[in-house]
Image (cartoon, rainbow, N blue to C red; front, side):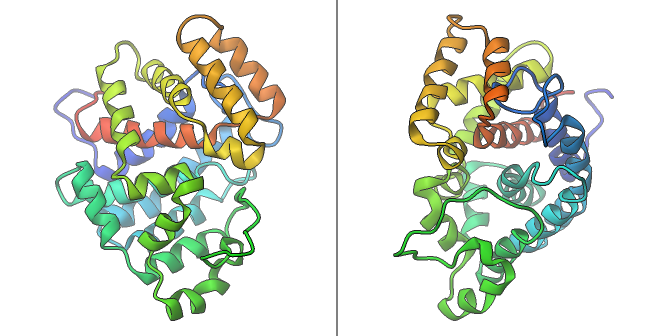
Length: 282
């Protein structure tokens, strides 16, 4: 492929998912050299293939919730389970913005702002396709429990809760929801790191992953382990970024301990998509 050949927006989104899982080392995550016991590299590849129909729908102008639910349904068509739920959630509004001709933080924020109640319904229905690690809801839960899936639709409609509302309420404890509410700031920053790097794209993505992991606590680690573990991972990512710890050894250790900074991986997938749309050549 030459610089003059242009992929479609949906093709770039699918490629971003494939490049993310192919990047190595990404401490704690599945990559082309490392598998978890129950979740392997091949599952992520199959998940990216399965997500394509939903990504196509997003590029064609389908509502965000509908496109997301369709992408997750397709992603789930492999034996590993949840591979790219968060990455797809992050990428779908970016695909909508890009397909409209102008992928910027402002245009992505506008896509989120236009989401409605049925987008929230689609988001909830997506939880029926795969098991997603979520915290137990607090007693004063302001939203329906996402684990209700489509059964929450009547309450969402009765209360007039939009997808933007759901993301705003979820943002304090969820890094992807925070991207929705803060204009995809970390996603675009990650895209800049990847574009400004050198060498193979997968190496640039791995470096961007380490930088993002060192910068902020991974909310998926907080959910699946605890904040203390997430803080440890951030400290050690900083050491690896600064050459004080071997990132390959850290990657092996975190996989062995079952610590998976999945939110950071999702940000890299989003960053790769933005970078591809803005001219990154593969």
